[in-house]
Amino acid sequence: MRIAVTYEEGMIFQHFGHTQEFKFYDVEGGKVVESQVVNTNGQGHGALAGLLAQNNVDVLICGGIGPGAQNALSQAGIQVYGGVSGLADQAVDAYLAGSLDYNPDAHCDHHHHEHNCHGDHHGCHNS
Image 1: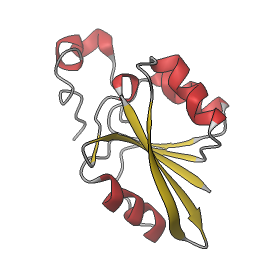
Image 2: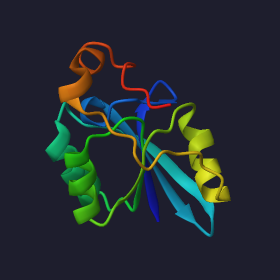
Image 3: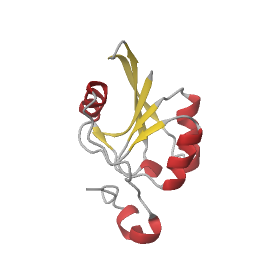
Image 4: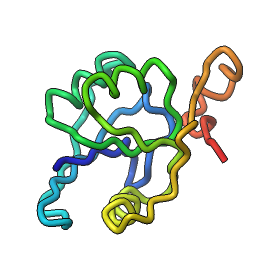
């Protein structure tokens, strides 16, 4: 199994479509056996779903994510756990332990709070 986390300086990056890096965790027997940070090369929302699918990702842990991206990931067979914040490594450990605190309705809808999403990469928090 492979888990991807939107990643910035050890933390879960809070806007899926603007993430510059993912951290991939390869899991065997319920434990992380390898991890690596992958640069997205500035790809946008739609291309990011493809990047994750090409890298055989099974699960995505992220902060805010729009419904279009959630749809694309779902169609690629990737489970999405949005609305998560904090340290990336801790979130993966919590997921593997079955105790990840996430929000299934964590959306970042540009039409309602565009001023929070652009320029301020920490503005897409979901409580």
